[in-house]
Image 1 (cartoon, rainbow, N blue to C red):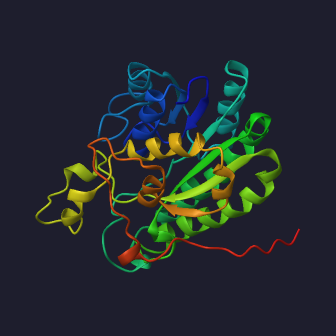
Image 2: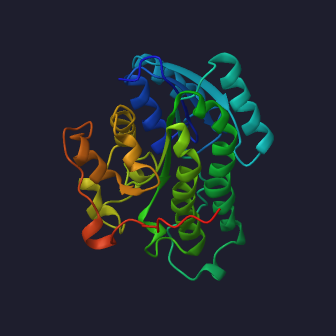
Length: 283
């Protein structure tokens, strides 16, 4: 359980972030729910940071809505200043916000796609660095956990080079941050989620989409939050720090099943092993 713990989940008005926030709330945490969507209609699926925060509270936690555009460093700084003022601590940071452009999953070479796809390196990589930097003074007070949402796109060709660079960079950044955080008992992990049953994914035509056959074994949006709860409560969690994991394999490690009682499979057999880095440190 996470009673008395404080978490920040970025990009949580919808999808993975929303599910993680709700799961952390169900475990008893106070959860700051961040995102740009403040009103119904701000995104095609109707979610807002306020509706997510309300659901966090309904599930047993304390949800706090925080409208924040993570492409704006000043807004991100204000977010953590607010956490400091209101809660005085931070135990868990979930870096999940990402600028998913329309047409991301369409095939074709990167130069035929909009140049705007490079925003994936801003909100999705740079924004994770900024949030972690600004959260660090709070996290090191009591030790804690940074969970960086990642993807097999870090090592396999998935959605093109902008997406791949964002995910690969995130895995390496997690590794390097873990080195700096180690003396302060702050764990940093990068986690490859599988196909997740987000609002957008659930609109696809299972008979026509290339993702259709995967829906049967797709993960719920809350799955990542169940894993975070397990990792945070593991007294030996420091041995995980700096590493990249399949979400499904972490779940198996801790005996965590998805909300439907199923055990989502690892994609290792057809996507390859997660990113690994050397133990060499040059400071």
